[in-house]
Image 1: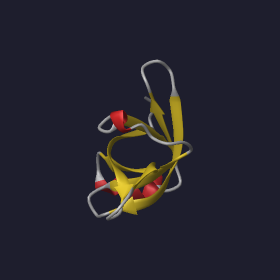
Image 2: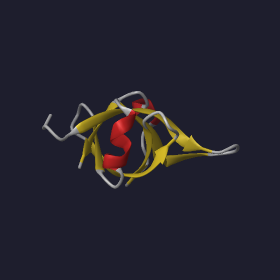
Image 3: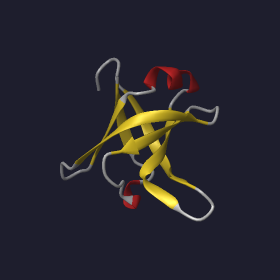
Image 4: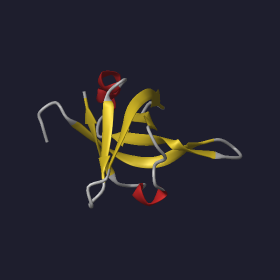
Amino acid sequence: MAKNELSGTVTAFRQSKFKQDSYQTIVQLASADDVGKVLGARVVWLRKDGLRLHGRVVASHGSKGAVRVRWNRGFPSQALGSQVQILP
């Protein structure tokens, strides 16, 4: 991993009372201080067989270091809990 590359853990889909959005997920960062630096950054999720999903950090989520990521295509539910790379 490069020096200015961060990683995070996908924790959940963005959801409301009656539906969930598979195009947006909540990603927990290692430290809450990095949230301001990663707004607008690109995000990459890599599956073991080489499939790559690309997204972008669109907003912060709460006060404990989580951000909201909007993906270019639907995020698979089996990948919840996996790691993503955040590229500045």
